[in-house]
Image: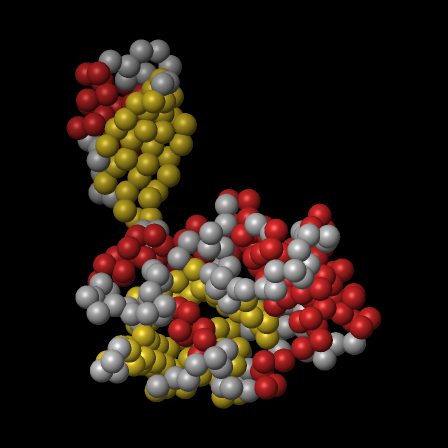
Length: 320
């Protein structure tokens, strides 16, 4: 039995735009899978094809070529829809509903009875931290509060799979942390989470695996270590100045480093990967510096993102 909750094979989507109905490829031969019980990040710059791919998976638009399945069932599937929850990018909710009324409405659409809807409303409002806003209509909600309300409505049917399109976009650091905590709690409860984003620190904190999409093409799929690679780019050193450090002494460090900078009583040094770290540490001790930290510098997700995006730049571009 396959462990893939979502399976995308050679997906292609072409839009026709303008008076001449020009063909614009939005997704080009994308393939990846999302496995049961994992948090999967779908990463790419704005306009890369993330939202288009998600709309195909949700049955909102048709694919031009390729195939997609959710829970092993071809899209669209009514049974699959009952087992998933979805939060679109920039969702619109009725302005004069409060969060409890929104959850109640969504529960009715899923066929939940009155008692089940009331119970789910209490659970989800506590989960997303909106107890303080029970009496407020959603037209008075901040961006972060609307995102949390959107997450609550996406979970009303206790789905096995949750799909979020840019759930942290436009949120402040506190709001992003709250959304990350919800995503992690869903995995802890055995749910599968598939979300798109271009905010890389959030991806590094929560994702088990990722896929890069650039200009409509999936360029890499795997764990963070597999995608970013394990190569060492260099070493970063931090020292504390015990006595005095002259400009001449600092220049000796700079001569052996990529960079060396002083800030108050601290000195920060970056070395190339092939630099002898022991040699630099010995020099630092001669100069009267005490070691605070030594850390290797690896290829990061941001490095891969920028390199992949640069390779995929095209005057045609892709749509979101």
